[in-house]
Figure 1 (cartoon, rainbow, N blue to C red):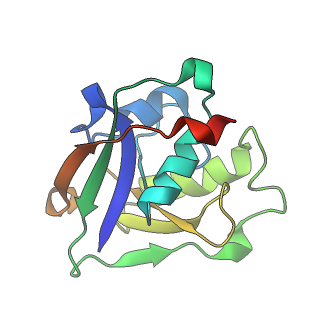
Figure 2 (tube, rainbow, N blue to C red; figure 1 turned 180 degrees about the vertical axis):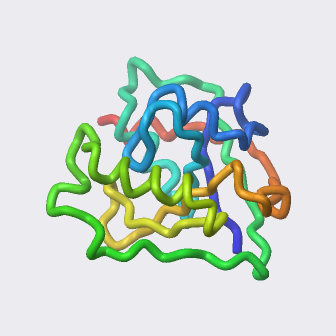
Length: 152
């Protein structure tokens, strides 16, 4: 399987999860390392663009394709674990607690979760501290200019 990540150029090869740990996000609290990826390039873009405006749009975004070997078992998030407002903005502590538990358990390398931005699509969370993390590889990194019509 190939998943996608959209990142600033200086972080394109960084799969440490340290950026997510600095700020926290939907599926992790501050201090918890996690790698966020998406099932498609379009979803990766949507997940980033909701946080930007034309005025704040950097010109150095890169699309990272990441190969996940078929031998890696992907854990599917049980939707019953989510509360009614799991996809609220800003993210609540409930979804962060679910993601934190995934990271701390080290049971799986990858957790498939619903996108809060595109209903029906999925993101894949990686535990950068899982023993099998070295099995995932960056397949390619390409420049990704945003089409400015998105912001009109």
